[in-house]
Image 1 (tube, each protein chain N blue to C red):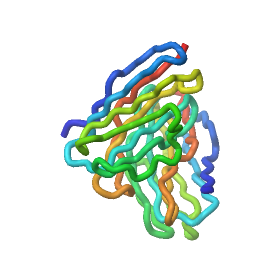
Image 2 (image 1 turned 180 degrees about the vertical axis):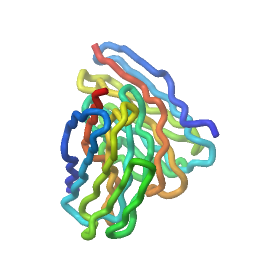
Image 3 (image 1 turned 90 degrees about the vertical axis):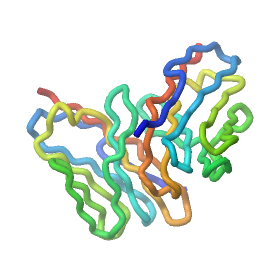
Length: 110
Length: 114
């Protein structure tokens, strides 16, 4: 079956530091979505990537889809306390269904 | 635009009891999903509806879980009888016609089994 990993599982950063999480798949992906879930909240859609090598930016967040469409990254520049939460990738494999990754939990120390 | 509505927000029951959750998706969203999210894990798809038809229920424990979406709008998820390992947050999400559209989640129901 489809294997989805997210690295790291946890990350603690000082406010102002950068943060990157990676989503890796064992198979080629059709597209990938990123979601953020605040503590006690529900997942909220951030972005969708479809094309090989695609890069999208949302203010301090940069999303990238790997050239081989097997991995993706989310990079946050100069983290703020509002960035705290768990970041999930949701991947779609050709012919299969969407699967959520296990998530990366980000803590930001003020 | 009103979001995905779920009720109740919290439920505490004893093992072997029954429980039901309700979800009303965003108006016009044909696809509805039920997820189980255990603490510290990503959401796990239980069932996906397209209008009132089931698209994927491969991970639904059918001996105890059931779900329906009779009129293609709101949906109910039932557990009967509940087990201790069913303690989790049950999230409902909806999206436009096709499943690769962004999902919009409700606040979830936090279920505790004693």
